[in-house]
Amino acid sequence: MAEETELAANDLLEVLDAKDAARLDAFLWSLSPADRAWAVSRLDRERYEALMTLLPPEDAAGLLEELADEQARDILGAVLPITAGVVADEIPSNVRADILGGMDFKSTDEILRHMDPEEAEDVRDLIAYRPDTAGGLMITEYLAYTDGKTVGEIIQDMQDHGEEYADYDVQYAYITDSEGRLAGVLRMRDLLFTAKKRPASEVMIRNAVHLRDSQTLDQLTQFFDEYRFYGVPVLDAADRLVGVLRRSAVEEAAAERANRIFLKVSGIIGGEELRNMPLRIRFSRRLSFLSLNIVLNVIAAGVIAMKMDVLDQVIALAVFMPIISDMSGCSGNQAVAVSIRELALGLVKPRDFMRVFRKEFAVGVINGLALALLLGFVAFLWKGNPWLGLVAGAALGLNTVIAVCFGGLVPLILKGLKLDPALVSGPMLTTVTDMCGFFLVLTFAGAVVEKLV
Image (tube, rainbow, N blue to C red; front, side, top):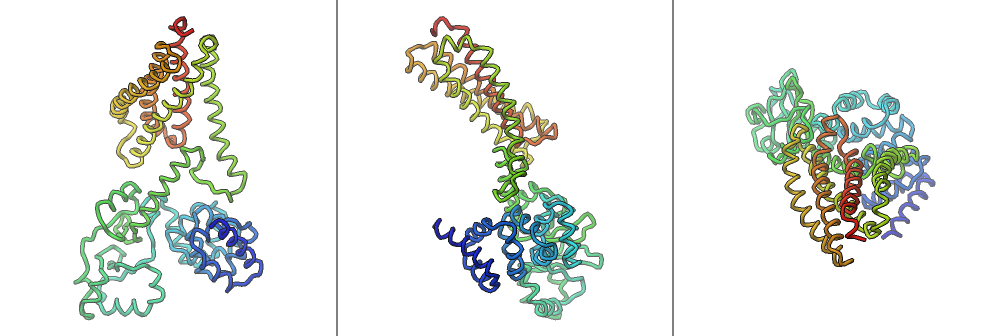
């Protein structure tokens, strides 16, 4: 399979260099989506222009829609603005807004100037919304008719513009008043099984369920958990119909947010990285996180330096110190993950400090006691010294309680300070668990050092 994928990338290079448009189109769509993305990711930026110009605009748009937004931005940013504008015209509105909205202002403006004026205006409207709101996730390709139309007139319009509307993924049509305010929703089945002379207003669903363009991703997720709709109309503050939000868009946005949080926790500043990004961006995003970590680790190492005399006398402690630090860190990271998720879902706020503390303290005490007994028993079996088991177990147990409480609370504190909990919680937790773990085990050992030697 790996050899086949490698061949696909080589074949793509060969087809592009031959400038055979028909062969390129046939070849690309003969690949699986995963192989297509892999092959395109192996292209250098100089070949992006050939890729976008040789493909028909609608196929080039379909390819960009499949790729990660970062990769699509890289491609559009590397080609001529006129080429990018022609392709962008064919991309669905919500995907197009995500791609162009994430580019620098100059590049986006140049592409917009080469797009169809109506499509460009649509992009400007969508990128004005925050990307994690209904307005930022909605599509603007939908069927809307002014009040007063008959069923027959609507059906005739659909037939006359069938080729255009085929890309709309139509499930409903919408009736608006003269000011663009939503009056009702028409189901396709009601249109098909109703007399053509009958006014559409008589068969439409009045007071239809709708969303506001300002609603957040958390609110949208809760909404679609409650309602099993395929798509829902989106209204602005004046009740004007401005778009349609599909369930799939909300699910994708929630998955992307979870992925960004994971990358931030892993140390990727910005929450996104692909290896075909410029080297300057990639190393700077990683180095800023690593620089913070080295400073914090030096602080933790200072605790060991202060207690070197104890460590010199009981060298066996060096075996247990990383275990105590690592196990406490794992416990703390579990608490961090729960707090970040609850913050994202709106289930806790910074003011819930004491409630979170009580919940995590209870878990920390139980898990700390269990881990303390386990490690203490291992230490006793290894050296046959119950005091060594007591020191190692007590240090791990107490450090686990500290780590769990700190891990649960630090995201709330950072959120209250307007800092990113997903990015900063990890390094802070690591430093605290290391410092406390080293301090506890060396302090406890120093108190009974004559029984350990």
